Length: 385
Image (cartoon, rainbow, N blue to C red; front, side, top):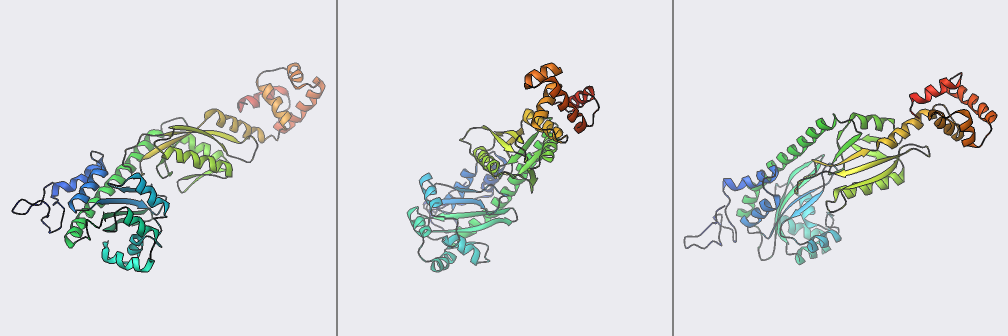
């Protein structure tokens, strides 16, 4: 990093003729690659771009699709100012002159000339007032990525003191954007590679585990989890999203996923999901947050869901018993038979006579395709009631 200086040593004018900035040499572009590799930070790299262009702030933002983990990284912005932006529906193109300007032009970079036209179209809005309050009415922006996965944008946010961008500022910004785009693609590739690596690891696990990225998309699944999902009537994976049919289960799962995305929240949570239409079709799942880098684009593994083995086994046993169409009383008798209890014990436990039990057993033999008690017990043992 070099300060641009005039012959008399005044560092307030950069070599491109812009006020209050620095020049960027080829080594400085490596800051963005360092951020992507995790050896640096995006906050430092973006802050440096703001500094060299004499801008109060720099922004990297992702939005527009559930393929991305939405984020809005702005340097030198307080939590209160960010909360103000969120409170006014700042992502709405109808009121946000920056988004409106982006939509109205095919130019590679949108800047104050485009903003002026957009402001005339929107009229006074809360967003314009917010930009004045937070000192960022000026600047420029470009789309780094805009495809089916979503959009990734880069912007300089300038105060009235910074002034409007100059041709020199925008040229530096244009060159920086190429490096930011390359770094973003590198980080996405690395995060996806991490998912591939963990996919290979979890395939060797015997537990029923599903690994999700920050956007809640399935990145890896063990064979046991695939088998479990396939056996559930009301749970499936569609377009890499785990979906459940029961509304209460949907709410519980959404809440749990939100907790997993919040690094300040608890690192583990258990929820009960209804996986079928039966009263007992309930499965416990445990969600565990995985360690993530501070500046993640959301493609790397973020949390893991583990299907509880005991509740899954109970569900599978019940599914197999359902094939016999046993009544609740007959199911209870089957459980006692599988435990090795004799007829007298079972009759006493059920508060019925041995004769009544004998009649119930005959009905159970017919339903299970057996001719005698020993065959029924063997069948029950095979399904591990």
